[in-house]
Length: 151
Image 1 (cartoon, rainbow, N blue to C red):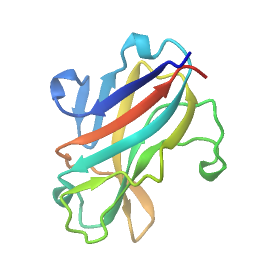
Image 2: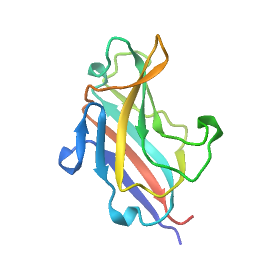
Image 3: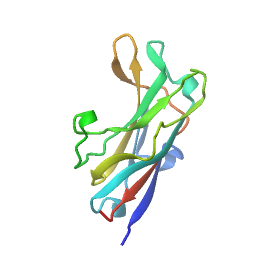
Protein backbone atom coordinates (compact mmCIF):
# COMPACT_ATOMS: atom_id res chain seq x y z
CA UNK A 1 0.00 0.00 0.00
CA UNK A 2 1.32 3.44 -0.95
CA UNK A 3 2.07 5.79 1.95
CA UNK A 4 3.16 9.10 0.42
CA UNK A 5 3.13 12.38 2.37
CA UNK A 6 3.97 15.96 1.46
CA UNK A 7 6.11 18.20 3.68
CA UNK A 8 6.16 21.96 3.06
CA UNK A 9 9.29 23.57 4.49
CA UNK A 10 9.22 27.36 4.80
CA UNK A 11 10.60 30.17 6.90
CA UNK A 12 7.17 31.83 6.91
CA UNK A 13 5.19 32.09 9.09
CA UNK A 14 8.05 32.40 11.54
CA UNK A 15 5.88 31.39 14.52
CA UNK A 16 6.46 27.71 13.62
CA UNK A 17 10.25 28.01 13.56
CA UNK A 18 12.50 27.09 16.47
CA UNK A 19 15.08 29.64 15.28
CA UNK A 20 15.61 31.96 12.34
CA UNK A 21 18.18 34.47 11.18
CA UNK A 22 21.52 34.98 9.44
CA UNK A 23 20.66 32.75 6.47
CA UNK A 24 19.63 29.77 8.63
CA UNK A 25 16.31 28.58 10.02
CA UNK A 26 15.33 25.51 12.01
CA UNK A 27 12.03 23.84 12.80
CA UNK A 28 10.79 20.66 14.42
CA UNK A 29 9.68 17.80 12.18
CA UNK A 30 6.37 16.32 13.43
CA UNK A 31 6.88 12.97 15.17
CA UNK A 32 4.56 11.08 12.79
CA UNK A 33 6.86 11.99 9.84
CA UNK A 34 10.08 10.78 11.49
CA UNK A 35 8.86 7.45 12.82
CA UNK A 36 10.45 5.34 10.05
CA UNK A 37 12.58 5.46 6.94
CA UNK A 38 11.25 7.12 3.78
CA UNK A 39 12.41 8.06 0.28
CA UNK A 40 12.79 11.87 0.13
CA UNK A 41 12.23 13.80 -3.11
CA UNK A 42 12.26 17.55 -3.77
CA UNK A 43 9.17 18.48 -5.79
CA UNK A 44 9.64 22.28 -5.95
CA UNK A 45 11.25 25.23 -4.24
CA UNK A 46 11.49 29.01 -4.34
CA UNK A 47 13.54 31.77 -2.73
CA UNK A 48 12.44 35.43 -2.76
CA UNK A 49 14.23 38.73 -2.01
CA UNK A 50 17.22 37.60 -4.08
CA UNK A 51 18.13 41.16 -5.03
CA UNK A 52 19.09 42.02 -1.41
CA UNK A 53 20.90 38.99 0.02
CA UNK A 54 24.30 38.93 -1.69
CA UNK A 55 27.47 40.59 -0.34
CA UNK A 56 29.87 42.24 -2.80
CA UNK A 57 32.24 39.24 -3.01
CA UNK A 58 29.47 36.65 -3.49
CA UNK A 59 28.35 35.50 -6.93
CA UNK A 60 24.81 36.95 -7.33
CA UNK A 61 23.94 34.49 -10.12
CA UNK A 62 23.93 31.29 -8.10
CA UNK A 63 22.99 29.96 -4.66
CA UNK A 64 21.63 26.75 -3.21
CA UNK A 65 19.59 25.51 -0.27
CA UNK A 66 21.42 23.20 2.14
CA UNK A 67 19.75 20.82 4.64
CA UNK A 68 20.77 18.41 7.41
CA UNK A 69 18.95 15.24 6.30
CA UNK A 70 21.31 12.26 6.62
CA UNK A 71 20.56 9.56 4.06
CA UNK A 72 21.17 5.84 3.82
CA UNK A 73 21.83 6.27 0.08
CA UNK A 74 25.10 6.84 -1.74
CA UNK A 75 25.51 9.47 -4.46
CA UNK A 76 28.76 9.38 -6.44
CA UNK A 77 28.27 12.96 -7.67
CA UNK A 78 28.35 14.33 -4.10
CA UNK A 79 30.77 11.79 -2.57
CA UNK A 80 28.00 9.94 -0.77
CA UNK A 81 25.79 12.66 0.64
CA UNK A 82 23.43 15.08 -1.01
CA UNK A 83 22.95 18.03 1.34
CA UNK A 84 21.28 20.26 -1.25
CA UNK A 85 17.60 20.80 -1.99
CA UNK A 86 18.64 22.35 -5.29
CA UNK A 87 20.31 25.30 -6.98
CA UNK A 88 18.76 28.69 -7.70
CA UNK A 89 20.16 30.27 -10.88
CA UNK A 90 19.62 33.95 -11.73
CA UNK A 91 20.76 34.30 -15.36
CA UNK A 92 19.94 38.01 -15.63
CA UNK A 93 21.09 38.79 -12.06
CA UNK A 94 17.98 40.96 -11.63
CA UNK A 95 15.33 38.45 -10.63
CA UNK A 96 13.73 39.04 -7.22
CA UNK A 97 12.65 35.40 -6.88
CA UNK A 98 14.20 32.20 -8.09
CA UNK A 99 12.93 28.67 -8.36
CA UNK A 100 14.95 25.59 -7.55
CA UNK A 101 16.32 24.19 -10.81
CA UNK A 102 14.95 20.65 -11.15
CA UNK A 103 14.78 18.20 -14.01
CA UNK A 104 12.00 16.00 -12.68
CA UNK A 105 12.06 15.32 -8.96
CA UNK A 106 15.40 15.60 -7.14
CA UNK A 107 15.80 12.42 -5.09
CA UNK A 108 17.58 13.06 -1.80
CA UNK A 109 17.52 9.34 -0.97
CA UNK A 110 16.40 6.93 1.72
CA UNK A 111 16.36 8.69 5.11
CA UNK A 112 14.90 8.92 8.56
CA UNK A 113 14.03 12.58 9.07
CA UNK A 114 15.82 14.35 11.94
CA UNK A 115 13.85 15.76 14.89
CA UNK A 116 15.12 19.26 14.04
CA UNK A 117 15.53 20.33 10.39
CA UNK A 118 18.14 22.99 9.56
CA UNK A 119 17.90 24.95 6.31
CA UNK A 120 20.64 27.31 5.05
CA UNK A 121 20.89 29.51 1.98
CA UNK A 122 24.43 29.15 0.59
CA UNK A 123 26.24 31.30 -1.97
CA UNK A 124 29.68 31.21 -3.58
CA UNK A 125 32.55 33.65 -3.42
CA UNK A 126 33.58 33.69 -7.07
CA UNK A 127 37.20 34.77 -6.53
CA UNK A 128 38.00 31.87 -4.18
CA UNK A 129 35.31 29.27 -4.98
CA UNK A 130 34.46 29.07 -1.28
CA UNK A 131 30.89 28.49 -0.11
CA UNK A 132 29.42 31.17 2.14
CA UNK A 133 26.16 31.32 4.10
CA UNK A 134 24.04 34.21 2.80
CA UNK A 135 23.43 35.94 6.12
CA UNK A 136 21.06 38.59 4.80
CA UNK A 137 17.54 37.26 5.07
CA UNK A 138 15.58 36.06 2.08
CA UNK A 139 11.91 36.99 2.41
CA UNK A 140 10.73 33.46 1.75
CA UNK A 141 12.46 30.12 1.38
CA UNK A 142 10.01 27.36 0.53
CA UNK A 143 10.67 23.73 -0.37
CA UNK A 144 8.04 21.06 -1.07
CA UNK A 145 9.16 17.49 -0.31
CA UNK A 146 7.50 14.19 -1.13
CA UNK A 147 8.04 11.54 1.54
CA UNK A 148 7.41 7.96 0.39
CA UNK A 149 7.10 5.57 3.34
CA UNK A 150 6.05 2.60 1.21
CA UNK A 151 9.61 1.58 0.28
